[in-house]
Image 1 (tube, rainbow, N blue to C red):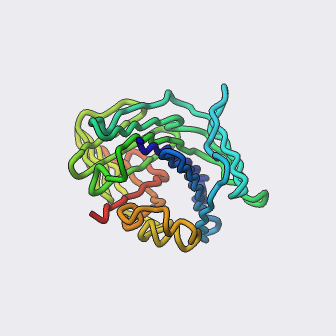
Image 2 (cartoon, rainbow, N blue to C red; image 1 turned 180 degrees about the vertical axis):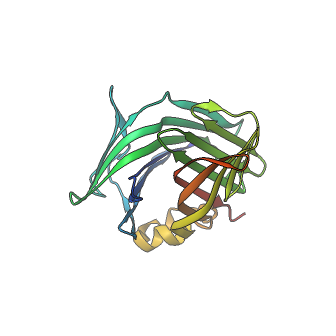
Image 3 (cartoon, rainbow, N blue to C red; image 1 turned 90 degrees about the vertical axis):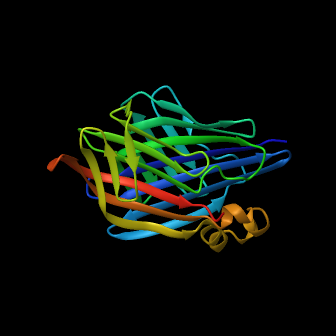
Length: 261
């Protein structure tokens, strides 16, 4: 029986830097079904991280006008109204595994209400990874995912290192032919670079430690390979350069996951 995973990522950053990041992950294999939801938000310099098991599926819903996420376990209610066309890309396609990326709202106007007492409003991003696999084997040794959104610019990037290596960057909705990605830089052709040096850590550590601290029940459900992965998530004041000239600046949200293999 195939393992199927749907992983949603949704974020929003206010002009002043307050932010929200939410994930909704649904894991299915035969009769086994697990839903995990999480949120990280920053308010006046204070960062809060929460995880929960959702007993019913708690994925976002796409309507005619917006993507909405009403997640009762976290007390989150949000909407993402996309301003650009969606992105879809098959990242890995082998007889044993397929991973498809869907940028449902690559650049959106977002409003997120958290527990009825804190609202984040600004530019946001919503995307989904769909994974079908024979097992839990990860197709990469490192994975970098990020976004940079301003009134003038939009960058979305994905970078896989390992046996299924690949780099994908979309600038203003157009996939770039030549691109490279590190923790500190996104570089394009014609000497265009997005600097990510001014990082603020949202969370960092082994995925297993993060989940099990909040959800000890997962100890016997999460495979050791996944639990041992290290993840760092940053909110960054990024700078876009054309050669040596600064052409834009704004907020980026980006992460790296390193496999325990």
